[in-house]
Image 1 (cartoon, rainbow, N blue to C red):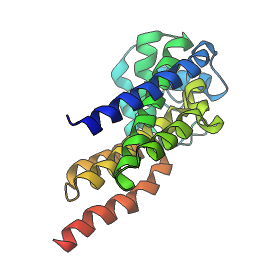
Image 2 (image 1 turned 180 degrees about the vertical axis):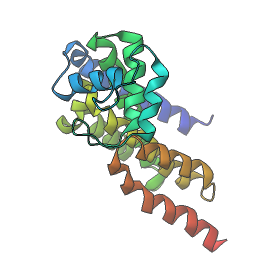
Image 3 (image 1 turned 30 degrees about the vertical axis):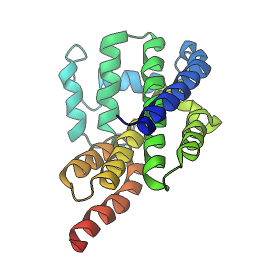
Length: 209
């Protein structure tokens, strides 16, 4: 690893550590608003699914084929699988859920730094760090660590952003970015915003070749 990349890793690790320390107080927060509904939903299922077995963790995979119900009108099966896994690990203790959300948020900041280093010219280290810091510490972003249901935003950003970064660094890969894009759409519908950018990079590479 050359000295420039080593410095990148040192600086971004320091930033992530400081951000994690700053946000660590949110771990002690209780479940909020939709969190209660989400945990109940992934453990007992929608009211229309009488055969749902809350003791069987694999039942949550049925949400990939689920239709909207009066109680849950959003199609986000990857979030359901994620929160069910959290329930199996932590039960109804909100601390574990918030720790996982915080880790996802910090990984999102790392992704912002990586995209910044890829999108702007050489010597953009400070700009990439500033962008990552803004992402990690902006009040609108902090909610993802305190609000379990906001995990949908973190998962959509991580998967969609990773698809974009993959296409930027290895244009023409196609399969990998498309798989990540598909997964991001299972997390939140707003991930559609990544589709035109990734398709433009991938198809443009093929066209120019």
